[in-house]
Length: 222
Figure (tube, rainbow, N blue to C red):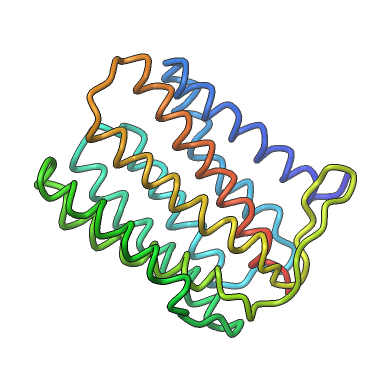
């Protein structure tokens, strides 16, 4: 097996361990596996750009800072790290010709407004920081949905193989990232049992891991 295949297998293993650890309350498993996901993606890059490497480094910092999803100070610092990552992704997308379109921007802006308003009413201590991060997330997701990006990816032997700047998988990655962060807001604002909170965190992390895989796999293609 070549380096890329090994790295992808390692990413899949660490992502699965991260999700299982969070969803089942196996804190040690979760804490060991989560910080390894983005380095595994970085190790699989054949010709990484400095901007993409910076994005994955920032994501790794965010993953470490948000190991405890209920610690407000760590959430805000983690959001700052992920803001750097989203800015890097947006720069890469813009460099490939992606532009903001009203069709893509309007639903994302509406979703941001609902989330920001809910956070301001019910969790004001973290609302400004998370709302600022949400603007960068919405920007990245909007750029990733630009239909002028290049052709779709393919699926070979059950494995996603991104095409050159695949618009389908870029758009899917942007949407999944939005879903993941929306689930963070839902988990924070909705009263639920401890078991339900663990399962919700598992859903957050599974959508996050898949979003990263799709975005990084597509953005690493020349």
